[in-house]
Length: 294
Image 1 (cartoon, rainbow, N blue to C red):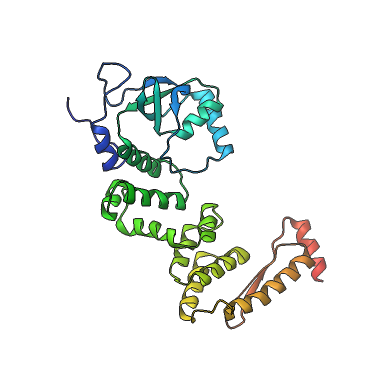
Image 2 (tube, rainbow, N blue to C red):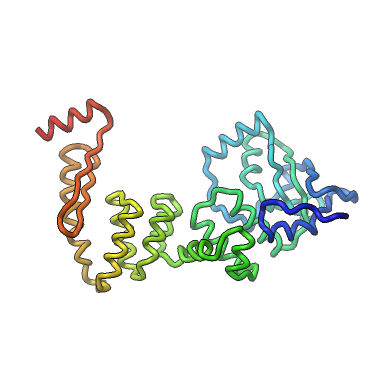
């Protein structure tokens, strides 16, 4: 049999699948792209699934689409035993199919051991699913630790350069509070990368507080990082001077917010120059604020 063409899922996954093109539901050898309808009740969840949360609204939207169009992209499973399969990729599609009321789902059936399945699942999910940065970081770490890959090899598998892989792995060194904020999308990857450049965890935590309280941009956080690196490391019993200064601004900010019944944001630099941001929801709300100021 001629070798199948490589797909766009990365060299590692393609190499694993090249030797796994036999449809194990019958004795007949089928092409790599052949699909089979299998009962959803015979499918087990993927223990190597890197995604830790599935957004309910998005699942319901996919279920509605499946009711109309069916499952367009088959899932990929491995055969575990007689009439038992385990998901390699496609858990989101499987969950949505259950919500849509389907009893069967189209699937590619592969043969793989645990390590091969781990690599397949992680790489396919990294490349196809909208994982948050922390899920990607943990997936990269698992590929390195459990599949014995070096960073260069991992980069080749997922189609990323070494510096990109390293940036994700560095996120795992951040304090848990910052990792959680990144996972919940309260801060961006750009914000996190700026924080990483500060080694002191206490300063990193303070920078997170400033970002969330003042809606700082990535450039603002990069400026904070430069200031934090230039300042001496604060003792646990002392607050950084910048933090003491910011507390005064936060008090003013809260006072104005209470008086104007609006979420006021005050930004200021070390020289005392800055700006006050007063949001309004409508022309009537703007007039209300102007009347209060007058």
